Image (cartoon, rainbow, N blue to C red; front, side, top):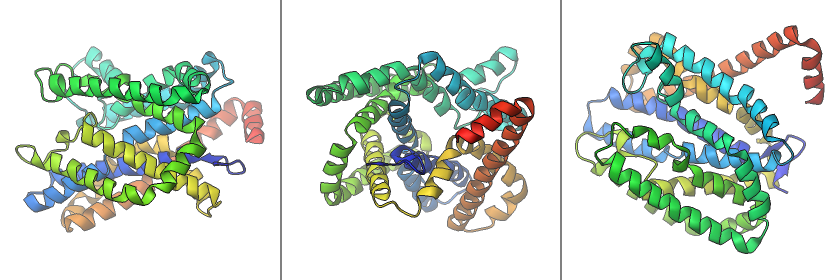
Length: 371
């Protein structure tokens, strides 16, 4: 009912597209904020950044939704082998590219020796967006847990709400601990990696597993209350914006962590809004389904590539962009980065398929026939 089997698209594809496009906007906004000296402009950039700050929860929700849907009959070894080549290899290759080609985009302390260089692969500090992959790969390792949760625990309706309630309570306890001890505490520097520990985003995977098993029920509820959600969404958005602007000092994206009440509520609200939107598009067999499917196919690869593409474009267009009004600069930079990043992902996919065809021609032909 909520999947177009001809195109092979479901709501997780829509969520991946929304997430990766927002990630690219965050990249552009970071550049815009660092190059503005106008307080009013910085305020608007900070507000817009908060509006785009839902990407990691949406990615995790979508990944687990699709994981529970497609991985029930896979063995754990088969699943890990598939994800190793699909997710880990691209991450390792792109991290290498960032460390060698654009070492300035490293996070925290730059590498100084072999050990600190290799540590960048483990922490995801090779570029500002790679922390998410480190966290997401932990979610993939928990495939048996999510499949068990989806098909065994959530198989009984009376267990769904108690499990979701308990998981939410534990998540709140976790982020309160993070807020007090890390974000605004004495361990801000030495425990900063806790924000990419699987516990920090596990809740969205649990919600995704429940949403897959009870898609129709969730859709019905959301569809009934969709107009009531609008003022609620506006209120939560305003609180989230107020939080980043109320922080002392200049506007900083570091003052908008995922791990707090307002940002968590906002992220969940956007995840559910896209869930509802995607469900409606699939039910109506919208003409845009093929486009969303194509974009979702390259979403992860484009996510990995987007900072590289943007840094490359800066080498050519930085001086020109900085002469534009900030709003125009953001729009031009975003559209060009998104277009080039998806195009690069597509070209690399074609090249990789060609290389595999040369090495294993029979397997590649069989794979294409199967598709």
